[in-house]
Image 1 (cartoon, one colour):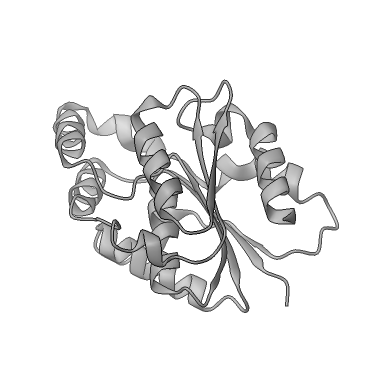
Image 2 (cartoon, rainbow, N blue to C red):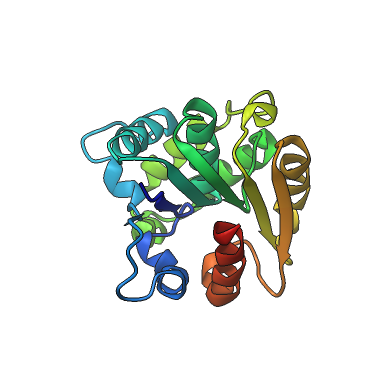
Amino acid sequence: MASTYVFLHGLGQFEESWKETAAALFPPGHAAPVYIPNLPSLLAGRETSYPALYAALEEQLNHLEGKLTLCGLSLGAVLALDYASRHPQKAEKLVLIGGQYKMPKALLTVQNLVFRLMPRAAFASTGLTKPQMISLCRTMAPLNFTQALPQIACPALVLYGERDRANRKAAETMAAALPKARINIVPNAGHEVNKDCPKELAALLQEFFDE
């Protein structure tokens, strides 16, 4: 059975953020199953927290048949890493883009302070309200996958944009700790690699998927 390709977007993005990359990877008529959820919509009827978001996504992924090739950016990378650590039998390949394995608590604290000062209207394009965004970020603070990294046996590709200095150290640490990982830098890209360089990202992913 062919692996299902799962693409998980970052905070403030939507499933449309993968549109160009997915189109380059999977032209019309491509037979591979692809799942690209809109993460905020998974929280409908649930509290807004990282555990609730993960549980909702886990429920969806567990219903997909066969193995999964997980590709996540930022928040999506955290979710993909979390799922791969809990379901090694389902994870066939793992791509982590601009992600963290241990949440930078000081950065999250500053980020939440900034969120509190921003007007509610500024969150309209994120799919979450201001209180929801603050709650989600606050509940991510305890996350730490340091001990899980060496246990994830599937092949992994760790990526970060050339201009994404904030996530470079975490990428290097994850690539060194994951047993079957390699790392690539995406030239001319910032944090949102899927928006900055979608075709270049697709080429890197295609090479990894074909291995």
